[in-house]
Length: 60
Length: 203
Image (cartoon, rainbow over the protein chains, first blue to last red):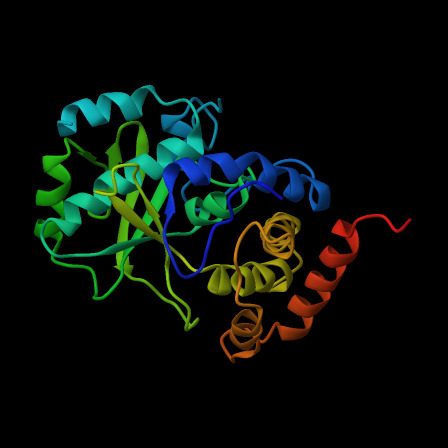
């Protein structure tokens, strides 16, 4: 495992957080494929009004 | 970098997790300037640890050491960022909603996680995985089974089991066993399953 971990007792830099993202996503996909975003919440109205009917702005 | 320039940069950011982190860091820095520390909680915190496509278009910030200050204090800080007010607790910054909540609730005795900018001048506290995991496990089973919360708990547990997120497992178990959660058995089962699912194949 070469990716930086998110440590407990010291800070992580934004750069190291970025470098570990793909690996964290990959392991998450292994146990729970796909998005785990809630389909609705108490904030739905404002979110969907602001983001063209979605609960978040477009992803990268 | 001027605040207006930072806002423009963040507005142009297309990656939601990165955008949320940068917005939170900017807001946290503005509260820090008046002596108040904040912590990212909720979906943005989960996203920070999992990249699980969990968060929606809002960022939740709580105060680390005290209750929410007077609304006029919050409004003044947010106005300096050019934030648009949607309600007394909700603002729009660089295209995301930011909810300014009360004092952070934490039962874990571990430290808040911390992310710092490249130059070390800006930083941000993030909720503890030892709180987040028992909380998601509870939401997965109570008041009724919830598949989205379960998927979220699995992703977070997997990130920790794989060693990519440092987790104090004893503390997570202690928190899970507290009367506020009572999900120690469910947490143990979930983690055992994740260990099996992510174990390298035997030769």
